[in-house]
Every structure is written in C-alpha cells, then in structure tokens.
Length: 198
Image 1: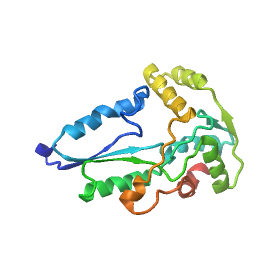
Image 2 (image 1 turned 90 degrees about the vertical axis):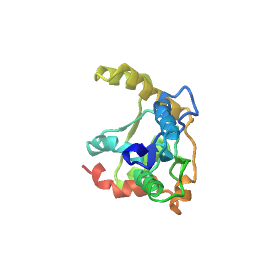
Image 3 (image 1 turned 90 degrees about the horizontal axis):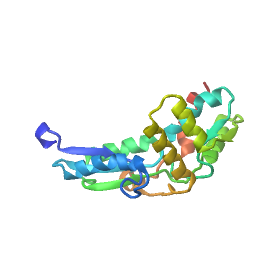
Image 4 (image 1 turned 180 degrees about the horizontal axis):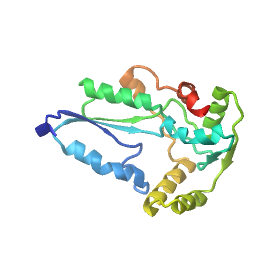
C-alpha cells in the first residue's frame, strides 16, 4: 500500500471476527484483517456490531401497516449508529492515536428486535406490530427469491447466532476514541423518522 502512496488504512470488519469459528460472517473478514496487519501501512481495525440502519429494511412494512418480521427472538445486541462508526474511522485516519488498534464498536445498550420496535413505536408515535418468523422459513424465502444458497445459509447462521444470545458484547470503544458515549438507537431512529413515515 505504501508503494501506492497509502500510509494509513482503516479496515471495516465485523464484531467477533476471528473469535468464533462457526460464524462465517466474521470469517469473511478475517483474511482482510490479516492482510492489513501484514502490510506496510499504519492500520486500525474496526469491528462494529449490528448497524442501526439495518432496521431501515422494516420501513416498507411499517409504512404499509404490516408487522415487522422478527428472526432473532429476544436475542439482544449492541446496536450501533453508523455515524459513530464513521466518526471513529475519521479519527483513526486523521490522528496518530489509533495505530495498530482493533476496536469493537457497539452502541450503549443491548437491544433485541422487540426492543427496537418498541423504540420506533415511541419515536413514530404509531402502533407497530411484530411477528416471529422461524429461521428455516426465512432461509427458504431467500432461496425461493434466487439468492445464493451459501449466502442464505450464512445469513440464517448469523440470525441464529443473535437469537441464541451470542452477540451480547458491549464496549466503551466509541467513547474511548471520540470522548463521548455512543449514540443510542432512539437517537438514530429520531434522526431517521422520515424514512419510516413513508
């Protein structure tokens, strides 16, 4: 990378990469992490948890008055605002304080899908229903839609990982880098209410 004039790099990875061999999403990022570490450029690795913006996929359902599909039961995770991830990346690229560091980025609280739906109900001030959907049914729908079988399997595996309560890490890494707490899901939802109002 230095031969191309790149002296510093931030690798966007995923929470748990290299820590749990039976979760292939993290495994997809591991070769990239190894390449960054082995390169000549100064590096920082960011391992964010589930993005708050992932719930934008619920917007069409909410706008149409249909229930939100819950594929993870009561499994909770440290949902993070993508703006926090971006700000940490900027800090890593523009200061020397984060060279050779790996940060696991989470929001400030553990939230399940029902928790996030309840927050959206309050922010949008409207009723939102929720329905549990079995993972086998979800995988079948993905295959029926023509998605790659390996992708469908990995996606279902990731949802199962959450449902089993295995993504419950919370860290203060956002605060460590930015000097302020991570934004809450409620703050993210309030800033994106127009997307859910159709």
